Image 1: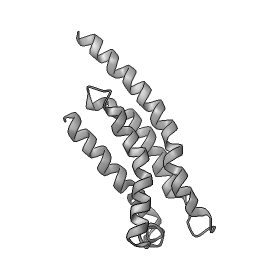
Image 2: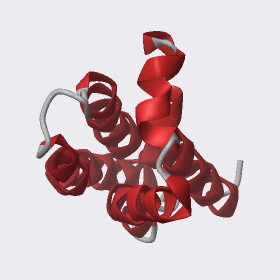
Image 3: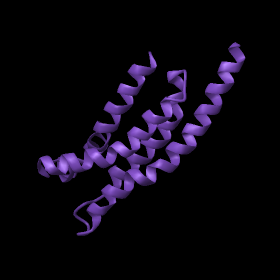
Amino acid sequence: MTMRKARWFVALAGVLLPYVVRLPGGLDWLQQYTDVGPGGWLFLGAFNAIAWGAIVLASLFYRRPSSLLLPSVLGFGFLAYAHYSLDLSADAQAGVALVFIPIYALAPIAVGAVIGYVIDRARRSDQA
């Protein structure tokens, strides 16, 4: 896989992740995210782009697509847990979490990106 394909895969996974992780909760759980109209879809997509965009940004410093694995697993793992467990009907202010979830995901993404960079660098020096 080329780095370009890996970046597209990260972007596609990032866009679909909030909806896919809600499927195990049933259709009612999924409808909390899908019954919002075009503005709601755009809102969720725009804020979620913070997280997957950070992973794509980290990929600019890598030479190997496999180096994207760690920031993707840590970042998408956090996002998956947060989006799966968020109950929008629990409180009137629960929707505010949709803004903060991708921002909080930047911490595990950054940790994974730094470790991925170190691993990528080590593999480069081994081949040189």
